[in-house]
Length: 383
Length: 149
Image 1: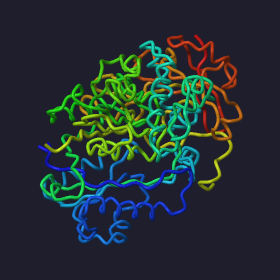
Image 2: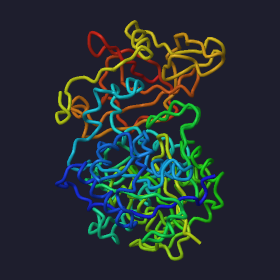
Image 3: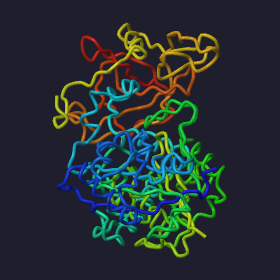
């Protein structure tokens, strides 16, 4: 059992911007060194490396640049935004089983100044199934998730008011976070309702930012964590979910598309956890698109199926509500770096250093993308 | 083509040996879906072996071409040039009558050969009955489109 055997002891991130100067590789290595410094661990001790399959800075690049010793665990997790907590979880498993001692996870991406993936990948059609969507005009992740969103609204009576609840709640978090891209830009409900369409029923503010940035975190055993500079964020539970007959992004080719990968991931996550959804102080829910938060509220058991939209009413996911969500501003309003900022914010909530600190935060949930094979972590304070 | 210059012209399917039979059928004016030889269950998207029964290679069986609209979207720019030119247009998901868990991506058109932006999106209804029509987008590729039944 993985429970509480490992911890996140170091985190770091670059500034977030529409355009950063250094290369993705340079940003990755700098931020990894900062995360190790945050933990008080020498880079030569790093012997575990994990990132996304979409990450351009690979294990060899990192190891030789930071001056790692012999690395004994290295791996990558696929499915874009489904990967983040998976990278941390795999390192936790590797540390807990003795395969390595000091693991580093990272994501470095110049998505703000770089090319939009859908604009170049369209002809390439990287999965065979894309031959059944892209020629018909369904090229972007926003279109693929809009399709599920429309069906969800039809089936459960959700409206744009609910999507607006999500977008404005997360924006308010960013307005308290000086590092957030949207720190100084407030958003009213009218701003949301009057925004241009991207793919109806999703408007501009239902979509995440396009950001340059890099983040990293350091994982060691709970025992080692006691000697580190920062308070430990214990990895209480870890789950992944690739449900039966599911597909990545275009998850319509299964019996029940609105029962997404979150459900399968949550089964595993809570099976090995002493902490239940109702115990969590706050949640960091992957938000490439605002409806993913609504689907994740259901999948991770904060409410019943079909009730996720209504859950967002009356400020429930804002600071002071029953479940503050994406307390640094998430992908919608802090930065979109494939969800890695949600991991670091989860750690800050456990340390008590968030700019939207939830009082007496004992535990938090960090999830990866809904709609793709996904992953999640429950982090908690050391007792 | 480079990563920084989006492709122009129609977006045609990129097929492998599993998916090509679908488009070989549409070129003949037939809508065919994989079906498990053991259990008769429909399978989509195509794959080399059936996930059901004894995992035989699936057969390609013709379906009626009738279904209902399960959901739809209306994309707006930024899009690739071929789609930006006609935006906003519609993309629908059609649940097939033979098995409503088989959902094909397509477009609702006003008539056979009609444009993707001809139908007023405000008139599209989830649950509406549709039937397939075929649209040859070039000499090689024919896409299924849908009209109200």
